[in-house]
Length: 410
Image 1 (cartoon, rainbow, N blue to C red):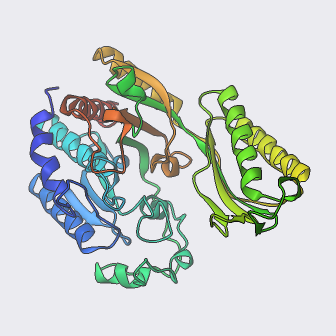
Image 2 (cartoon, rainbow, N blue to C red):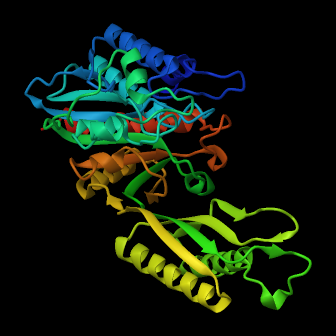
């Protein structure tokens, strides 16, 4: 199969123009005018290529070529079309674009497939406008409860239902009926890390998406005068936090990959120069591909935090507000991807994903696989997000070969 480089050079700038900023970034939030224009123009381009197009009830966009022998078996590929605020032009949208380019090339080269080939530009994944994530993929499987979004609004106070209505969609009264025709889902995505680039590899074959546990922790001590309170009398919550942070990170480093641990937000109170901080609120984000190890490690962290606070006469409240299990990819599809990479002499690696993707919603429902391409410098969610064109082309080619195996062969 010939290179997709010229196809990418023609279509990526076009799709990136919807919601583009002067600095090269993209802001394309769910149900915004920029989002709607991108979806409508994408629909028009696919129609010109002979794909049957449609929107579902929430704005997921589909383009399909019906199968000649097994039309009821759908091989689906794509990713989300929305972006973060001032994000890059690859995260999400390139997976949707690649699915279209791959299906278009397959159709022109081999004609109609045995199984139905379908691409999807998922309405939303990021949660950048409204406090809800995976709206697009969750609705495909009836996992999105309309009541969860019926009364939420964006930062400007615009209700979710109003924004949805202005784009021509209406919030359903009950969860949508799950699709039962999807046989396989394949997603192509930039890595958003630097592992592939560091090892000078073209393709990542993802074996699992990490599980995540997230906490908000509140430490309660005593605010007091910074000058007249002796060190031995203090109940300093920043001191307690610093001990927790240092001990926890040392423990994470000792455990090693693929565990990662992040203290991402720290808010001492009263947060002024001459007062001992009586309260400190902070977050913890811990990820691992093994559910049992993730639970065991974070259990140790909880015990360590309580011990430190007991030693320092500090109160502690621990809120575990996210507990997402790791999501393995389908082993048969992983093996098939490996075979393709080997036959094409691609420099690839088996790896896990440290970030969340739509594939984690699909994988518990249908056989799913996720393909990574390198990210220059590991930069993502940033206008500087970039991948070399040869690596983008290798990614689309790998996707196309995988879709050929799934849709054109018995």
